[in-house]
Image (cartoon, rainbow, N blue to C red):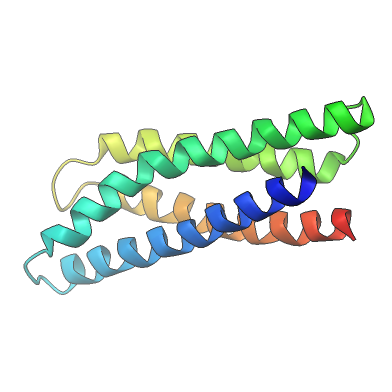
Length: 134
C-alpha cells in the first residue's frame, strides 16, 4: 500500500505543477493587460478544489497506512509534519482563492506565494517519501 500512496501523491504533485503552470499563464496575461483566456481560467478553477480533496485524501491515507503497518502514526515524523503543512497550505490557498475578487485583488499575491510553497513542499515530501521506501 505504501507504493500506491506514493504513486498517488506523485500524481498529485504533478497535477499541482500543472495547476501552477495554469496559474502562471493566467497571471502573465493579467500582468501583460491581455484579455484573459477563459478556458484556462475555468480549468484552473475546476482543478483547484479537486486537488485540495486529493491532497487531503493522500495525507490521511498515508497516515492510516503507517498506523496500520507500524502501529505508530509518527513513525516518520518529518514526512508526517511536511504532509501536515502541505494540507494546511492547500486549505489556506483554497480559502484565499475564494477571497480573490477582481483583477487587482491583494489576495492574488498571497495565493501565488502559497501555491509556490505547496509545490516546494510537495517536492520535498516526494524526496522524503522515496527515502522512506528505499
